[in-house]
Image (cartoon, rainbow, N blue to C red; front, side, top):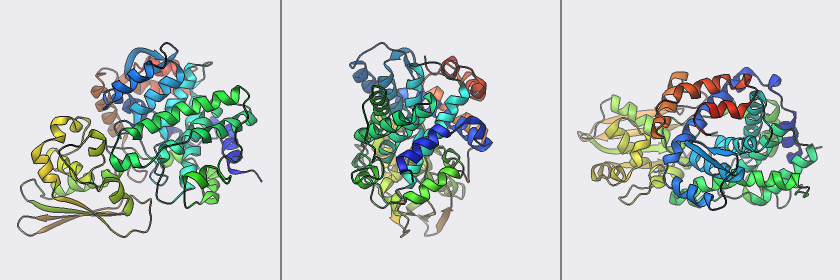
Length: 452
């Protein structure tokens, strides 16, 4: 019987557009739109310019463009690094909740870079590669249902990138398996960055996208790769994950596609903060206000407390604040929502927001599922002693509560505006909507104006 690496690579190599159901095709199209727009907005993320300057020191020139930055070309691995940083740099990219994984930041960045350095590929082949890459990355995430210690968007993400490139280029099977093995040598990413709210999170995602191209290049150069990649005694699961459930995760490879299970992020924050933001919006509609809030308790699964239960303080960096539910709740109660503009120094040091955030507490509800985002319950105690409650059974943007096409376009427009590309929405929508019939996927994306 094939081992896990062989099954994952065979899945990627055997996938064809004609066999992909319409639901998965539409999801791939929707999350491509989302990721391109989010990546363009990421040109103005904290530290994005510093990352670009650093990468340019590795060498300029090349054929690969960077999202949101016109007339800029870099060597493909460098462009993959910058694009992945920008897509994840503001916590606005899509997420697979059960796998606790952001699949498109790595997969799309690696694919765009690979497209730029090789022969032209048609839109259907490109979209198929996206579906394949997400399938593989998410399968590895689902194979580890325990609490995260390593940062899975990077550690599992690099394997999704290699599988996507293997699909895109129809790599020989043995070569693709070698590349998959080389990816294990580059797989890295720690949750300590999440604990501290440091920009190492998008750096880890960026490194995974870049590392995938290096892994592929090593295989193309004829270097044999590790073969016990997933199940070996020092393979992916034993080294980077604790509790494992590989068999049921692999079984899902023949049951639809994982991209249909991915969630949009309607707010530029950690996904674990979305339920609280939505609950505060609904509590506000019920009468909660800045003036009458005495205390807000948000009871949630352990993962939520772990990821966004941190206290707000006056020296927060943007990355910390995006993962701080007390701050996010205060912003929502004050402004009605959370947007890309809410993480500048003026907002982060606003004494009124900080005082309001001090009234918000995240409490563990005892849910035994270490990967659960819901259900949650928000309870607001008002200054007159009365209470308001709001249950959150599902997160906005999840497959059970998806964003409408109009909401997707509104988000994309806001991202492009944040990047200074106020006039490019229609071009981007046209490019994504027609991509499946395009003879040259990269040329079509470039024609949208989001990258050169």
